[in-house]
Amino acid sequence: MSSPAETGASTDSEKRDSPEAPGLPQLLTDWGAAYGQRFATGAKVVMAETRLAVTSFVLMVFGVMIAAGLAMFAWGLLLFAGMRAFTLVGMPLIATAIVLALLHLLAAFLIWRGVSRLSHRFEFEATREIFGDPE
Image 1 (cartoon, rainbow, N blue to C red):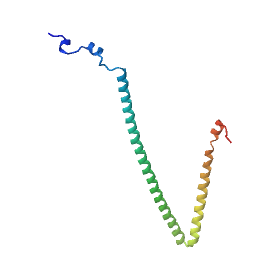
Image 2: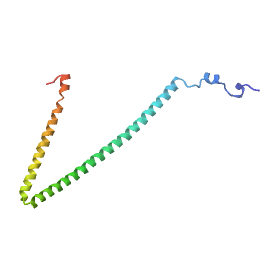
Image 3: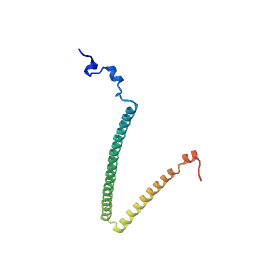
Image 4: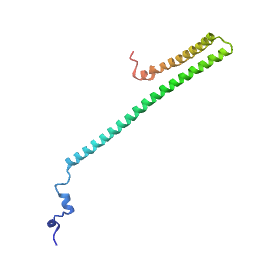
């Protein structure tokens, strides 16, 4: 019977002691390659999610524009119906238009006043108190 060394087979201790076992440089190279692959995969996922977000945003803007157009058309029909109803009960067309215009001006003023009150939220009073007012 021949020994393992004679047949070319190696034992476990020979495998551990062989110079072909990966050293620190090889381990660092493998780790760098794995880290690079992880980074590349992460970048691909980020790009895919970004494309999805941009597509969703564009569709949302498009949907809002369509909804706004439909709402304006519906508002126009409501105004027409209101004017028609007022003229059917005997109110002159010009008076109906003036009343509806005044109602719209009142609504616009109230909305403007409410929105202008929101501007006071941009004064950052607590932040100025913490960091001091630069003025």
